[in-house]
Image (cartoon, rainbow, N blue to C red; front, side, top):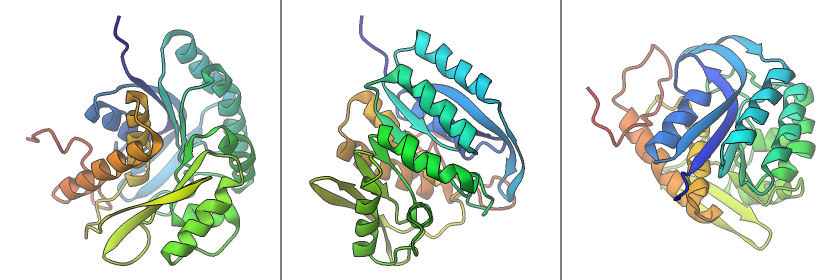
Length: 269
């Protein structure tokens, strides 16, 4: 019997549907992958900000992971909002049931709106306990700087240097995203032990960028579930997100920073 490509997202719920679990599942679907989910937190959130966060107990997070592991043939996993140290450690324990499955870690710390989504005391747990399990970690410029307790990189050489420093925490590859940088192009740098690659795309002028980080990491996971190598998955994900941002320019969702168009390949009504 032919297998079904299944990707699992472990993340928080965004009530406005633009980021988190909802963005991940839309992305999996758009890329032809079956999506499963483990919810870590529930946010009251819209395009203008995060109004409230409820962190789920570690026990129910663990139970969700066990339930999925016992039944589904997961082929790639993506982590997003993990909120606090207890959640990080519950996820790390639960990932033991998925040995050999490619892991994408999106170290979500702050929402597009500026709201904090990862408690400061959890950052070390992410670096020392979760990163060593990852095939790829995908921080943006601000997250990379915070993880390294360093100033934010302002040039491609500095971005690559920070990506290489993050490799020391144990992930196989590090993708530092340049979307928060400046210039006509947004360039992401993928670092691995033997070298690096750069992925560039024209910067799009739009405020509809809610959920871009979640979407990129989910797209990488989807492509890994299909069987792509990490560089191929990153290249395909970059293209998917660029098209989602371009398509999202005409979306009218909410009063603030709207979402990208995860279903840009589907005619909207």
